[in-house]
Image (cartoon, rainbow, N blue to C red; front, side, top):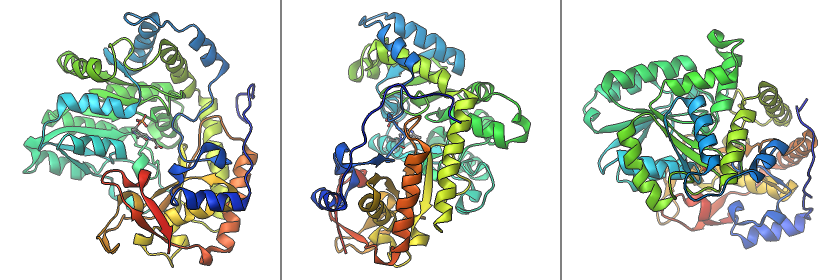
Length: 453
Ligand code: F0G
């Protein structure tokens, strides 16, 4: 059972099918355009959508709002250094700001970054720096439905080949995303991380963790990697941070806060360079775009996120929803992780071609059916069409992500999701595809307008 009870509640809006149909039409069939009160169960993201604990609220009230030298910053800095071992901790307003600040100091046009899989903002920030982001997911990740663990690993042979290959001198850094959000939320094993770390050290290339879901990754390591059975998630997380030269953190995930993040660095000279961008674009280094209360809430949230009872109940909630989805005949990326389920929309809706966006079609159908908001991870996100709408690039898979906000929804909410999915599956042949009528040059899935075809 959940190791907490509920103390503050927020009403869930009720909408009719007709209201949802017209809302969808109004926003150009892009769920990012909906108003929150048009959504009943919001599984768009697990980012910044978790419930704060009483201890976090209390810590927030005690926050010190001094512009410089805030007490809250020093508590935060010490707690984060204790966890990560990085002596230089720069607070930022969220994960992508950490990316921008780090890349301003480490990247120059023409350089290359390698990753198990770059998250979309990470890739966008690399590309905005005039650089190239190369993903090296392990070959096992290609088999979406196999139950083997750690399909979030980096391809070590691919990494070695890149580090020794003709472009080696242009490789600026390696980023390990824990868990691997772009590859179905699959975890990274400590064995893989240690080997990647050794390769990076051998070649003198810095290794950074994208640590947004470091606690969930650590929990899955304690469950699935035999050398770590019986270890605590905290011990595993500590060891993971020690294998890298620094981290990029969106505290909106495993910090369980509504806003916040940080950059952790071992290298003092690099930290000084990052500070320049931080001051110019985020804020003075003792607040970095956050209020003192946010820093306090992160400090407390990082501890709560590592509680094994909380992590177990989160895994069980994901397993519960996974069982409901499988019961409808929908195939999932297996095994289910903790922060989200990824539904194989391409398999469910074979009558919709990739450039008609089956994942997005399923998202729209699920919204109309049950007021549930989710997000496509397929050709709307990764694909490209020519001016006639004909496909140029298609995504490798057509997925729909149901993200699970932390401590926010109960099992009955998840049951509603299962029932709505079942209703969609019953009429799946009638689900239409979509075409883009208004595009955007970067991260198009956020802003594109579409229409059913
Ligand atoms: N890295 C990973 C792995 C992420 O999942 C995210 C955000 C970020 C970096 C960027 O952090 O949002 O604080 O700027 N992921 C959210 C999601 C948005 O829905 O998966 P941010």
